[in-house]
Image (cartoon, rainbow, N blue to C red; front, side):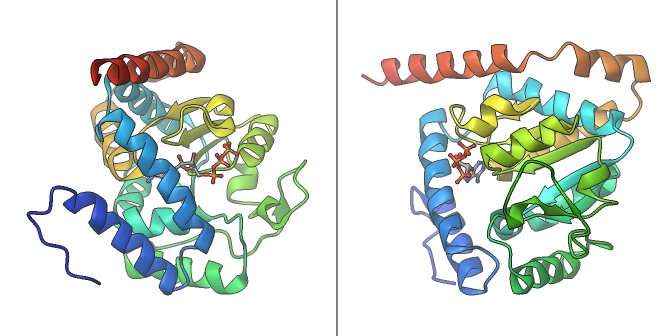
Length: 249
Ligand code: ATP
């Protein structure tokens, strides 16, 4: 990796770019993953690169939904592995939830590389290799999934998802929790619970909530999930963004 001076004002951002770029060279991130990262970075810049308060509630609700689910699955792609593999595995362990590799640009080689990297970082079992089921309504390799993974899940966490697959998962009756820095994306608008935060902050935040909610009653957990209003929260995020931009003039 290139050496980035620690006192550089954009140190974290440059380090993150370096991780994504390295993961592309290693065949984990698809080249279009760099473009997706750039879009995410731009929105993160506008948000002030921090978790804003409506999003904290989204992360709490996501933790509750994952605890409430009977078969929760955390979907993973190349960018997530490049940025947050260890944190993702830790979150899956504490819920507990399955991890499934699910790619837009799916090749056997990338699936193997991503699952090897997850195992190297401590994952005991990784789903997504069998691809013995298909998400109905999608006509592309991105529909492929495991019957005992995403296909039969009742709640799925989908970081950096595309809108079509998010909708197709919703249409299967699943609770879809998206992590997407763009509050205007189709994914953000379609998901059951949208977390407008960087995956690097969102994953540890959700894990903290999972620990806090572990001793809560099932009624309390259910109430958190059932009183969630995704549209209202997206509105609050857009309001925050417009206010912040106005205040910068
Ligand atoms: P949609 O189909 O939902 O409209 P899209 O085509 O706009 O999605 P994709 O390229 O499918 O976008 O997905 C990338 C999404 O992931 C972008 O919306 C981007 O903001 C978001 N993103 C990129 N990097 C991160 C990150 N580190 N954390 C959270 N979100 C991210």
